[in-house]
Image (cartoon, rainbow, N blue to C red; front, side):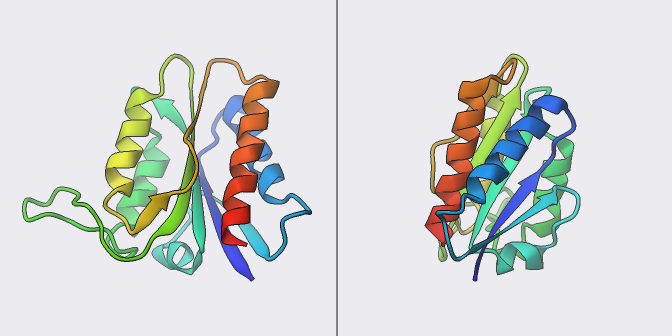
Length: 160
């Protein structure tokens, strides 16, 4: 069975609600052949990432950046998961495999920096963006929850 790894940092009720919607979409009974594994961003190992057929990231935007927990996740798995570094030690563009990934970011006022920070790291991994980024500002409403469910379902269907 194929695996979708959902890596999240959900410290607030808003992000918890969005995570629940992502998982609901990914667990849609019409999508068969995929095992959905949700892990807090401080838990996954590089092996969990390498064993997954797709990755879905959920993070709040904190001070114009991804959460510290998600940054720790990337710091922990980057090289073992195939991350590419340039001669200057900066992230380089990865080559090789194309593991599908998705991203959901919630921010009170802005998500631009958080999205940019995740993309700058992910472009150096052998991953490919498989769905539009879901950016949610302010209060989480039914439309935001529907977009989160759709993101979960899309990634699960892609890896099934």
